[in-house]
Image 1 (cartoon, one colour):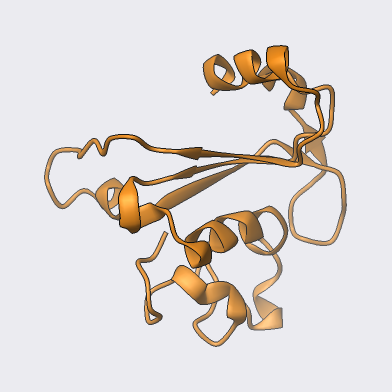
Image 2 (tube, rainbow, N blue to C red; image 1 turned 45 degrees about the vertical axis):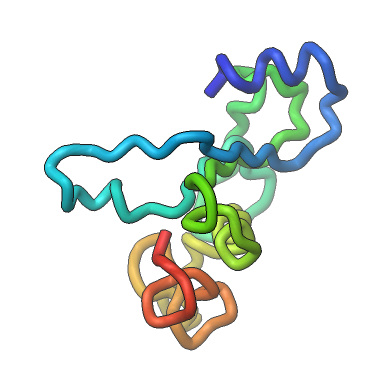
Length: 131
């Protein structure tokens, strides 16, 4: 990802919490039913500067060219499959709520939200594809 972010930081100030990348072409993996082919978006934590979500604080923003502002990266799949509001919201929510304790009742698995929470906007059982 540094190959994508370094040129951005050479042109723009370090003023963004998140960078969202849109795929211009979909690449399918073989075999055809590989789990990766069903992701409509992916989130990568870059910096965690808080406690209480199940993640320990860390900062790898410098490796991506950020001076310490960047929190995360999101990559969305091409066209209507990835570029819709509920999907980007779902990916952004991974920064804070995907790793909280199961006791809160908001998680369906290790990184996704229960269909009974508003974070499940693009999870299985709702209107869109699970990411």
